[in-house]
Image (cartoon, rainbow, N blue to C red; front, side, top):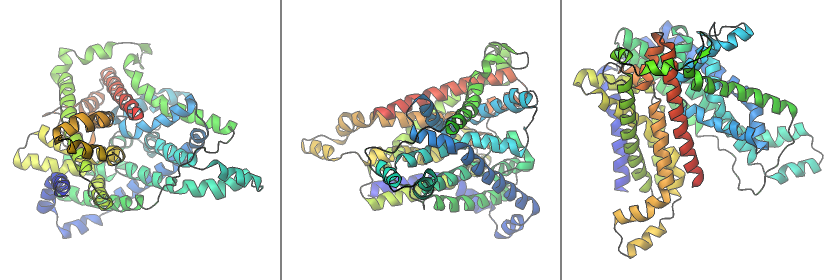
Length: 512
């Protein structure tokens, strides 16, 4: 028990160092309430809630019929729709922004086809958030509908119930907790959106994440930025509490009821599939096509690693830095999370660990980056150490979630038997634990690696490009400097790396 609490406290200290030092030096109650009721603060709060709420509504509407299709079918289309769940967690934000620009700008393919231009508007933000977050609804709703036992529906049909009665009194009540949980998750992710709002919406539609960054960049006013961060943290804390309230319907069933395919459900699912994967594929293959001159080219890849371009934008160095820091942090996160989970012995400890670790997800990345920047300014701590610290803080809760079920369900009676035979802790791990858990451990390592590889908010808020360049920052800078072919080529490489890592980790998880 002592070892468990020691490592949990160690984790809490990691994120209290940057956050705590910032609060101790810059938090003032009078300044807080003065800034809180300013017109700009209220406007930011308004737009943050507005875009997050609209993103939830649109995400739900476009995902409802695909959810039904996934719940009632086991074919290639349903599998591809279900696999879109990788987008909210692993798809990098910069390739998304590039893909949206190529499709929806004034010269974009979709814009020309329908004679529209939605960039730098609330519509662009909501559409991008819907692309990112609607797969959460597809996953939660379809899993909930799959859990409805076959006899529930068949007995209702025998009793004379029609389709709408079954939907109203059986399917909706069972799926409602999952819908609510997905809604709160989508709201939270939209509420803390940074790269999408910054690039596709602009300052007019600032969220608190963007406001923190712009405040630090323009005036380095830590007090003001801290107020924005605290407001956001309070809202997220409330949301995280609400998320834990609804319980998703779960039953162990041998067979679930399968509805007949409705032509409208099939058609809408195909349209949804095109919407989601058009952005993924555009981002993936954008590096191979010159959208201005309408021709295939490898010029972007050739220029990307040229000496001339690397003299101004350290692309090669950013690859090295990103791979190294992602690998080291992923290993540390995996080790720390495994030790914590390995020492949980009771249900009470599970609850305590969940509260203390998962609740830290309520700390925004921009808020955390602000604390790390403060440490750099005042104590000259190198950027690579601070970035590593930041990535550990945001990754441990995710690794904890990914590993929790597998590690806690491990049969430790095997270890007890081996101890009787004289095996020490090292042999227990090398010859029993690791062979049985290796797929899970490797999969989680790869998942955390992929998340850090595409992370943007922390490194960009800290403006680390001049000191410790990373791929996401370089990609954004290339795009801003109008090196479009090079930026698209780098986005293609990033997506292919992340997508490959995700699929390997997904395969390993299925092999469990």
